[in-house]
Every structure is written in C-alpha cells, then in structure tokens.
Length: 140
Image (cartoon, rainbow, N blue to C red):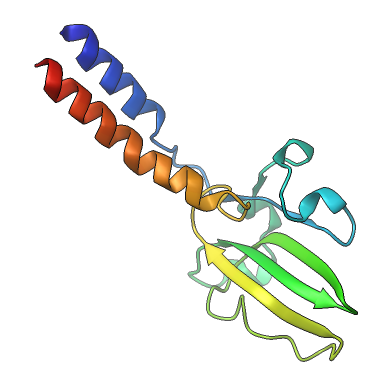
C-alpha cells in the first residue's frame, strides 16, 4: 500500500518543471531538412530563450514564447522554430516578401512546445496523474 503512494509521489515529482527559463526548439527547414514536419528532435537541442535575448527586450517586461511558423516560399514549404519576445506580433503577417505566404503560425509557453508533438505530450501529462490517482484509490 505504501509502495503505491511512493510510486505516485515519485512520478508526480518527475513531472514538475524546474524554474529555469523557457527552452524552445530553434531551427529552420530552409537550412536543415530535419527541422520540417515530421520534426526529428534527435538532431537538435532545446535552446534557452534567455541566451537569445536582445538588448531591446531587456527593457520590456515581456516573457518569451516558443514559435512555430510554416510558410510557402516559391511553392516550397519552410518551417521555422524559434523563441520570440513579443507574443502579440509573433504571428503577424510579414509584408516584406510577396512570394512568401504564411500557412500556419503558433506560439506556446512550455518547454519544447514548438515541436510537432505538442498535443501528445500535453495529453500524457494530464492523463498520467489521473490514471495514477485512480490506481492508488483502487488499492486503498
């Protein structure tokens, strides 16, 4: 009985994130094909957004978000994953190149959330504690 409590506690403790800054995937499929979809995490490392922070963003009380942008450039799909510091303008359409069309843009605020598998990991983090709680209640 006590083993069940210990197992539940250990699994919940492992799911707690540390207080470090936000970490996002940072790459572009235009320079590395592994950055495209499906995303292959084994070729990249999560990047601490604070290390990418420019002097202009230190003056603002902003927090970083991860961004995934999918564009069509000359009929070629280009995917960019990065940290951004202004969530409100992160997905604003760019008017610089008329040959580039934004297809998809999303921002999120969890470590590594700008990969292709965001929904699967979020669902697991909700279902796992629920399952463990039900299992513990059954044996009590």
